[in-house]
Length: 357
Image 1: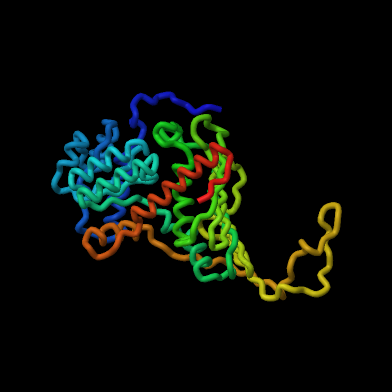
Image 2: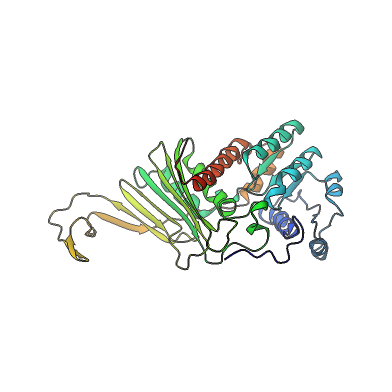
C-alpha cells in the first residue's frame, strides 16, 4: 500500500508551527511558573495557521525575517519538517537567537555539524527537544538499572506499538525526513544511549518495515550490544493490533515488565536459585523441568514503583542555562552520537548487515 500524496502542494505546507509553539510557551508559563517568559509570537508559511494563532491571542509574524528581527525574542523553537531544520536553525542563530530544535535535529550528522558550528560562531544556545528523557516509564526502568535491582542486567527491550500507520502529511514523505526511525526512533534510541551512559556501543543490527508505506519506514527493530554486557532491543511498530509490553528487562537476579506508559507491571526477584524435587510440567508434546514455574519460596513478585517526573524540567534547564545557573542537559556531543547511530540504523537495514563500532 503506497502513501497518499493528495493535497501536498508545498515543500513544508502541511505542518502546524502555531499549534506547537503556543503549546510549548503556555506550558512553560503554567508548569514552570516562569513569569518572566512570555510568548512573543509565531510564524507559519500557511496563512490559516497564522490566523489560528491570532484567534488565540498570539501574535503572528508576517514572515520569518520579521520574527527573527524582533529584538524582544530571546528563544526560538523550531517545529518544522525535518529537512528544513538546518536552514531555520542557522538563520535564527545568525540573528542572535537561542534555539530549541525539534527532534530529529537534522537529516544527517553533516547537517548537525553545520548547526553546531553556527551556534559556536554566534555564541548562542542551541539544543534539541529530547523531552522523553523525562518520561516516567523510562525513568522507572533507568532507576532499576542504575540501582542494580535485578543484579547485572543483560537485556533490555523497549517497544512502542500502535496500529494507525504513519501520520499523514510530510511524515510519510522521505525527502522531508519522514518515517518512524526519525520519529519515535529518535526518542527510543536517545533513551537507550542516555541510560547506557559511558558504555561503548559495540554493534548494531536493524530491520525496517514498509507495510503501509513504500517510501518511508513505518516500523523498525534495532538490536544493539554494549561493552557493559547489555543487549538492547528498540522496536517501533505502527501495524500492531496487539501490543507487546512497553519495557521488559532481565538480569542475573530478576526480571521486570512494564506494560504501558502508566508503569503498570511487576518485578520478580530470585532469592534461591536452586530448588529440590521440581516436578516436571506438561509442555506440549513432552515434559520439562527446565521451564517449570518457580514457587513463591524462591521468587518474590511485587508491583513496579513508578518514578515521578515533570517534563517541564527540560525547559527549566534551558532557562537556567540561559541565566548561567546550569549546564545544558541535552548536549551537542549527545546529539552527534545519536545522529551517527541513526545513520548506522539506516545503513544496517539497507545492507542487511551488522554495523560494528
